[in-house]
Each structure stands twice: as structure tokens, then as C-alpha cells.
Length: 615
Image (cartoon, rainbow, N blue to C red; front, side, top):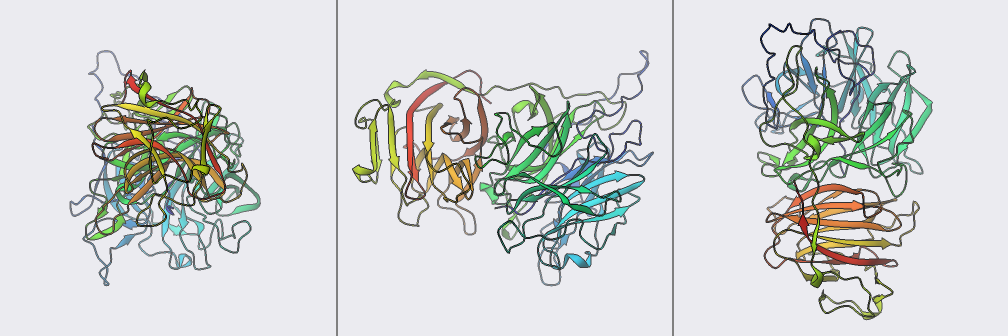
């Protein structure tokens, strides 16, 4: 899983009357610009942009990557610039060190007047702080307080052993930065382990009562929060509280909106080239300390882990969209800044396996008090109206909310209520299992999970129950219960659910899945063959798992497959869209696999044409 991240909401005081600067209140509109006299010329529109954002280097090249981006307006009086900070990474494939390896820039910094076209201004750490040891500085978060900028960052592997959180200070948003010389959050063992937990991705806010908090953590160990000391350089260890279960989230960002604290976190692998399924999820609380519940009321601390999707890949060239920050422009419009992977150009030249993660920006809208990106359309890949990045401009972006595809005409010949005593002849097996391992009765199909999978050339290969897929656009849906216990027991990777199957090496599958101590819905994509060094499998996750979970795969166009999950069959969470040409003979079906000893129970399979407007 991923070990890099992004962050930030700023904790501080506002000092520029017209600037949405480095202060606690991302998501809070800046002060309005002075009114324009009716006789004056109409305000200018901001420039358009097209993702990825332009990050120009001094030699004219574009920076290849800006992972875990954090952006904010200056809080220095008279400074009109916005600033962008990136995780330690190579900026180009051509710059090499003496050993011929790419040069890693430790927190590269950029500035912009329009929030979309940026110029490089240097690295925060031209010389890496000694206490980092062999590690790098990741996931910057910049806070302005009482005339000083604080740069919080993750130390990927400190000299003391294990990851930690560091801080540096400056009187300027671009430094020079003076490192504190020791961790704000020192390395700590994970619970019930002698290994150090992942203390990545700091996020600092100041709550309504004036208390400052720092959030940190990742998959190994979970997400925690501590109170910061008044000087911002240390934390109070006794105040630590866990806010999200391990093995699900990283890249915390906390956004205040309408009296709620919204947790945003990214899930799955950040860096799997063209098969990256990284996405952003949210949950909210009235308190900065939680509990944070998603739109379904499920906690992000639960074993059946909660989280409502906010930013997911939508079928264009951008995959792995995640690790976000949020800024508010001068019109009051929120914008989400994040990184993604171009599936058509995923790696640094000559460095297959080293994933590029350029920075993107899109409007963040609010729908029923929950955030959605670009009206729910997700990452943009066409020219877009830009943010109101300077006073006096007028907004060119206006939200238009999209609607998810809805079930249309049922395809009766491919639907099944499992109301008989044996499988209908519409079904056929790939590698039929023993007849004692499955049965149909009482309106359900019960199928024992297999100690097998679909990951050739590994063996044994699991059985697949299939039927023909309709031509054109369609959706296939099931309701499944996998009887793995609702506790912290590890049952990797027992699962049951839907599949669209080309062959053993080419499919997409949406399942209720056990992932370490959690239960999640996973949407996987397996591709074969692949070029040397490329992954063959990538995964995203969707909404929470219930006693029973509704799963839906929507096929649109020639080769796009979008995941939806639901706890009640009425309110659906939309997940990733995978693009995969599964061939003219692709089949739809069910799987129950990943380990023995459990049972997947399917209540029905419904196949429908699509009615209404899709994306």
C-alpha cells in the first residue's frame, strides 16, 4: 500500500483583509473585494486552465510530479501570490545525481498569481535536516501564526528509526526554513507490535476554542491526533487520540464547513502506475476529535470502515486521484488540489515503476452538506474556468451537478432471484466447484469461499459463476453477505461479489472483502499481459460494508466500468471507474474466494439497461 501523502488546513490568524491566506479556515470564504462602481468596466474573468496544472521550472521544463500537494495564499501583507508545496520527489527524469539516479528535491516550492500556473522558487530543504537520516521530507503542511510560517512534514525514516513528523519555521512562505532539529511527533511503536507505526502526513488546524491540533498517520497504525504546544514545535503525547482505523486511510485533511469538521483521507495504493485506484473519502464530526461518521452514519474507526467517496477516477486519463488539500478563492468557491496519475504516461522516462504524480485542481462543491468534486463529475481533463485568485475578478465557474445512471428496463433472461432449488441454466461455470460447496434455496445462493483466487499464474485458480453480458450499456447488481466476523480478526482476503470476466487475467470485480482487520468494498482491475515492470492488478475501495451489502457495476461506452455500493439498496456511493477492454465475449457473474471457511450468500442478480443521464 501507499506510503506517501498529502495534507493541510491551516491553523492561525487571518491578517490580510482581502487574502484567503495561511489561516485556520480552509473552506471559509475570504473577505469580499471592494464593490466595483456601476460605471466601471466589468471585472475580468480569471484565466482558464487544463489539468495537470502548469509547474514551470527555470529551464522551461514542466515539473513531472508534485505529489501530496498543499496550496495556500500568502499571509504576508502585500504579497499577492499563492504558494504550492510538494512531497520530496524528482522534478524531471533528466536531472541525475553522481550515481545516475534521479535527484530528489526535498519539498519543492512554487508560486502563482492565478492558482493554476506556477513557477518554481526552490526547495524547502536544499540540505536535508540531519535528523531525517536516510528518509525524505513528505506531505508538507504550512501554517501561519503570529508572523511566522510553520512547515510541518513527514520524515519517512528518521535517524532514530521509524517515521516521524518534523517542523521548520520561516518569516517567508518560501523560506529560508530553519528546522527545529527534532521531531514534533517522535517515532512510536504500533499497537501490539515492535515495529514503528507510519507517522506520515501531518495536518494542523486550530479549533473554534483556540486549541491547535496535529493529525498524522497512515495504513500501518491508523490516523491519530494530538494537541500542539503553544510554540507549535512539540505535542502533548498524553492528549493523543485515534480517529481512524488502520489499513484504510492516509493523507488527512480537515475542512471546516457549516459547523462541521470534515475529515478527508485517501485510500489504497498511491503509486501503482496505470492501475492506481487511489481515491479521497470523507466523514464528519461536530468535534475536531471525532467521532467522524460518513454519509451512512458509519464511523471511520469501525472494522466495517466508513467513508463517503469525494474524489474518484471517472474514466478519463486520470487515475489514482487523491492526497488533497482545499483552498477557497476570493469568490468563496472551494477548490481541491490533489495529485493523480496519467494512465497513458504513468512513469518517469527510463524509470518504469517510478510513478509520476502531477498536481491537479478542480472545484469542490457542496451537495446536501457533503463535498463533491466538479458537481460530482470528478477529475477534469478539458479546459476549465479558473479560480478567482485575485481581488476584483469575477467567477467564471458555476456548479452543475451530475446524476448517476439509474436502472432502466430489466433484462429478465439475465436476472435471477435464486428462488429455485438449483441454478438456472442461464449460468455456467469456469472450473465448476464441488456440488457440496454451493446451493440454491429460499431465495438465496450460498457459496462457500474458496482457498483460491484469480491471479494467474498463481494456483489454484478460483471458480467463477458466469452468464453472458448484454450488449451495449448495462448495470449488474447483487446483494451479498460474506460471514466473516465483524471484529478485528484478520481474514485476508476472503471476499464475495460481482465480476465482469474476460478471462482469468482480464476482469473487473467488486466485492465485500476482508482486508487485514477491516471489512471494505473493493473494486479491482486485472490486466494481462502487461509490459515488463508494469503491475497487473490495481484496486480501489468504495462505500462501507454492512450485514449485507449491495454491489453494482455499471458498464458504459465500450470499456468503462464504474463501481457503486450501498447499505440499503437506495442510497448509493459511486467509486472508481476502470477502463478495460474485456473483449466481445466478456461475461458477468459472481465470485466467492480468497480463503476457505466462510460463505458468501447472494440474494439476487439483477441486470438492467440504463435509464436517465450518466456521466
